Length: 578
Image 1 (cartoon, rainbow, N blue to C red):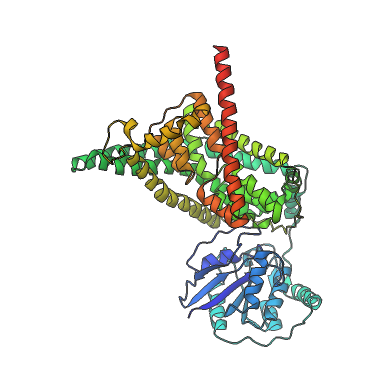
Image 2: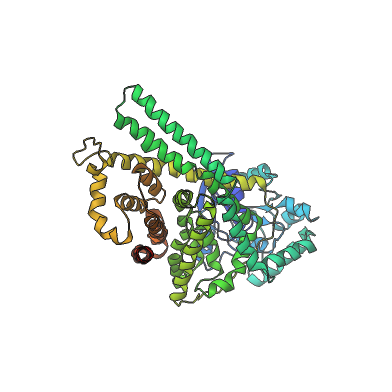
């Protein structure tokens, strides 16, 4: 049986970064609380006989939140053969107190004092020998970001997992442990305080009169750069490349004797669909890069602090900022991050999340932007994002709810982002998006292409009007006629309930045609209708089936009503002008 080494520590101590480094897994990292919301396991890279458990960050073994309680119960039940306590060396108070609690359980323990590079940069030092002697356990000075001191720490952890705990005389009361913790910090952690410049910078980002506007400026800058020059040019080149490859692949397959149906499945159904999604990867990569910089620098937690008062007017709070920002990438991790909220606050946050346009919707926006706003496509996308979030804000105001829970947050120190960590995290997110595109999008593209070229008897047809897909779209067309949507648009929206990325591949395969009014109506419906099935499943896990069903029905009804109002009003105005 494999032995378990549990990584435990306070939030923001670099525990997950260390976990990724010493295992063969790639967990999400970020310089903010709540990155790890459940236990994660990975095989130790140096010795496959050991499994490493990454526990949620906690300040104490008796904390009350579900995630912190799970970490405490795991350690108290002695589920690990060894506990490796990870401590933020620049801010050791909470970490040392937690270490004292862990030692009182009698589990073999080693300690890793992280951020050695930051301590050195600030002119501080750690008396590792004195700390190790005082606690009678192996202690190591490491830097997970710089990958220094790791091998000795891992060797000590594996050795401790096969031995018994060393005796250590510790106080039993929490008050005495707190005093001992302060004494050890003052005796073993010397210097390394923030400079006056760092303090002023921190105050500017978190407590000045400009803090909120700086937060808004960051978001607008990211959206503008993502959708503008020169990234949009790179997108056009990738799109043209895949279009060329798709046409050539069709000709080659036909020459080799494949039927046009079979050749079309591979060239138009698979390659063209995949290429269209990948062509938008540069723009998504910049968004992912932007989020990674905010996380790594410690600004994301400050954004939550700064926007807390504003969000409370909308029935939310600072606890909602991180899930809402994660929603720009994907609603699934955003819904999982809603664990920071409790009870009715969590339900209200889950209702708000679908109003944040996720990255899967972006290719559809970019496609219509390139058709409708050729000179300034980025402006169209920024407007769509603004409208979607504004409608969400109006909904939150109309719900007349108030955030019940107080917002307590320990701000992590501002750190200069590590280029290696930023690009690694961005690459992981891009790879996850590309992996989804290569599975969901390719298979849905093939499926839709076949449905659009086969009749009900599964015989090839040359007229798309005789295909199974058109038959399905025709059945629902009367319901969507008042909002100006045709068969192709209906089918695309239906596929989007499973994966939003599939909408674009369906529209391209069916060569859908829109008027200006029907295009805007489609965008409105697409923006506000139900989240994808994966997001609904995540919402189900967080708040139950009833909440997931209500969100599905509410978002779809809202999308239909808004599209109906727009299309009918715009059509009436056009008729009046003529």
